[in-house]
Length: 335
Figure 1 (tube, rainbow, N blue to C red):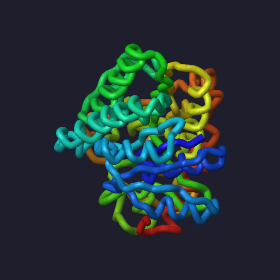
Figure 2: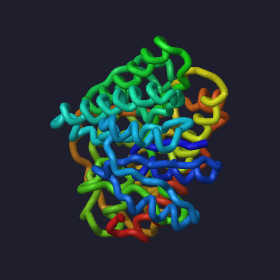
Figure 3: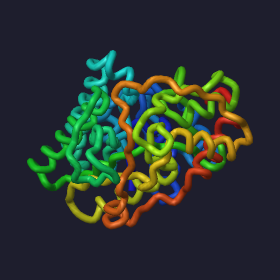
Figure 4: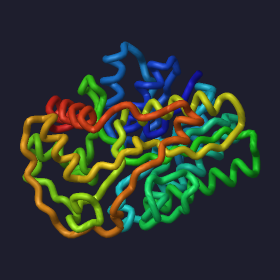
């Protein structure tokens, strides 16, 4: 089966390409490289002695996308392409809606023309907003606090409407919690541009010496140690969830919404301690005021993923930290 991976040279996309290749799929990547590096795909090709056809293109360019679809005759699409920084989305909402919502609409129009009806969409646990309780189930109320999260929810609503109008589609909405870690080879990993927005790459950059200290946003939450609690999931587990979703979607026309998380909540201080143990390096940090829009506690109930996909997270926090540190120490300046 030929699978198009949009945004496939990015952090989650590149790890998903590996799992698709290992599962026997033929992978083609489209990415405009606005927030990623082609080097990730080159390294995968070297590691697995394969060739990944790559097209530097924006999914909003429908003429170019039609040409790519004509060339390959895809069996399905995994759609990662989009902008993802919460803070940037607040200051650049037009760009975020154009890229994320506009990109999804343009892609679906081409898929419909080409009669390619299987889609796995990269959504986010941000669509739950500040949950009324934990763990979070897929049927919880949806609420968003920033343009990034709202763009994900708008796309979800759009895809639900598409399925209602034509139930010949097979669509998977995968809501990620907090992806961390890296491939155990250390050759690919998370390579943020500028100062990282997420905890694990920030800690990694402090450990390698690129940043002076970690800022912990909020020490007065109603949690065991006062810092925010999140569900961290190894990016390889997350990638395997996409393969499982593709396998389930090919069996029948359906729309499924699935949480991909570990089901375990860890505080910021838990992660710092685990990373220090994994790396042998003390992580200096300071607790600063809360960040607008952050919630106290957020972790998944992953039971539906096990039921419908036969999938559950396997990696524990210590392995996530070990793999993150291996990537960072082998690639101190990223790609």
